[in-house]
Length: 286
Ligand SMILES: [Zn+2]
Ligand SMILES: [Zn+2]
Image (cartoon, rainbow, N blue to C red; front, side, top):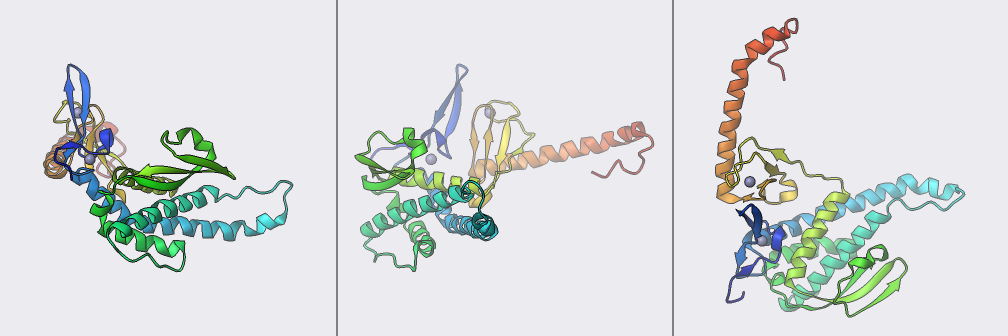
């Protein structure tokens, strides 16, 4: 907590950001908060921590399948060594472990909890995520401290500028960097997003027929609440966000608009029907 309100640490990606149009220019303002993240993003981080163990298990199961099905081919002896198809999934699992377990260690330290005990790293993930979700406000008030991170050598250009030392190892870069509450939230949100993407969960977005209350354009899109993330509507034109009670009011208006649209189509249907002529009996089935 700080004495003065400031921007939510998610910046322009803040889930509760507001957008205004001034002189035709779009201005995005993150939610103002006394904490690191606004309440909406803080709740999202807690949701992500609750959901992450299931995604981790799903990814691990996928590797298990690959190993079984690819096993015979690997030993079958092609001319070139087969590239393991699971490299990317495997690397992401290691990244989940690195990020989750390192934040677990830091929160346990501050919250004076005993060290995590688990049979192996895989078994540690649900324990760590459960603890982090329960202590999310400790996590999101951590001061910056040096932590170790690993990065694929292919992405070395994304190496943060303030790293204190790095070393190449195989296809990886190992480095130390100062990370605090702000990074914890962003890392976990991004990590969760990467697991969903790797698992092939592409969010289903639904366009609304109600025009945007801010800019008046028909650009509203409802984002899929996949994986327990907060449901929201965004305007593709002005980026206005609809959340909470405002979202509920918008969806009531949308339901009414859909109802009117359906009534209109029913009224027009007989005409379309007669034009369709021979296709009698199929008009109402859609
Ligand atoms: Zn925010
Ligand atoms: Zn708009």
